Structures are given as structure tokens and as C-alpha cells.
Image 1 (cartoon, rainbow, N blue to C red):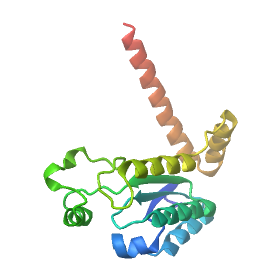
Image 2 (tube, rainbow, N blue to C red):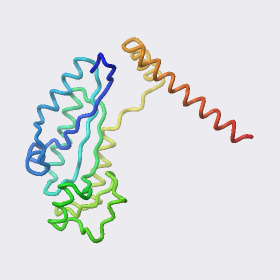
Image 3 (tube, rainbow, N blue to C red):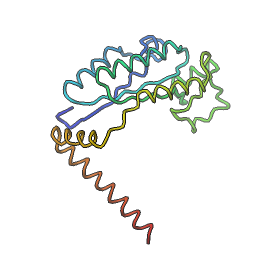
Image 4 (cartoon, one colour):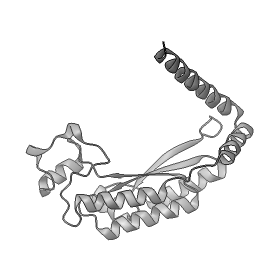
Length: 191
């Protein structure tokens, strides 16, 4: 992957609780597999981003805390990006069917066209929508990357230039195209 030009990729543990993976999601994956992916990517210089889902039915506060602890562990191993979305029961999915069967959503008053993974529409027996969204916001703030200083941005670009000149020039080209398009838009507004 590195030789082909990959600089990063995303893994989706979805949960840091093996119980949630096995019993709630039914995902045939082991947490160790994600840890190994992060370790191996570190060895070859590819960045790893991660994706987690909060608020599955039957999930407890303890499961959520376990997920966040696991995300911290992946960060210690070298993962750099973290997304935390809410469980979203799209029609046709197993999650949707289970939510309807449990009465966690009312299909007669459910507009799937407005669903977003930043909203929470499941009537969960343990936590309210407001509690889960507040928890999500707190976690997202914790995992937000620090803003780079000008020196940090320049350093990152120099490292990219040294490690992968072709990618550096590709990014530079797209940046210049973007800047020129903005200049043209601004010029046209003043006519």
C-alpha cells in the first residue's frame, strides 16, 4: 500500500467492547486485529484513522467508556484520526429491524430521509438522546487534533516533500488550483 502511494486509511472497530462487537453488532472481528493494523501501519509510515459508533441498543455506559478507553489505546499505538458517530438505524439494516422490534423507534413516525450520523433517534432504555449527544461532544473534543502552528504546518509539508515528493506536488497543485479558483470567484464578484 505504501509503495502504491497510500498515506492513510480508515479502520472501523465501531466499538471498543468485544461484547458489543460479538453480541450487539454481530461483527466478526477481534479488537486485536485493529491494534495490529495500527502497529503495522506505523511500521511502514501510513497513518490510520478510526471510526466508532456510540449508542447501540443494549449498549451500557460501561460499554461506551470501554470504547473510549480502546480509542485512547489505539491513539497510543499511533492512530491519528477519530470519528465518533451515533448508531443510526437506516431502513433495511439489521439495526433498524431490531429497533422496530424493541420499540426503540416508531416506524410510523420515522423519517429516514432526515437521518444523519450526528443525530440520535433511538429511544434507548439507559441514556437519553441529550445525554448521549453530550457524551459524544465531550469525546469528540478530547480526540480533536491540536491545531498546528505555522511552524508545525511547514514541518509537516517538508516531511511530506522528503518522504513522498510526488504526493507533495500533487497536493501543492490542488492547493494552487483551489486558491486560483477562489481568486477568480472574488474577482468576478467585483465586476
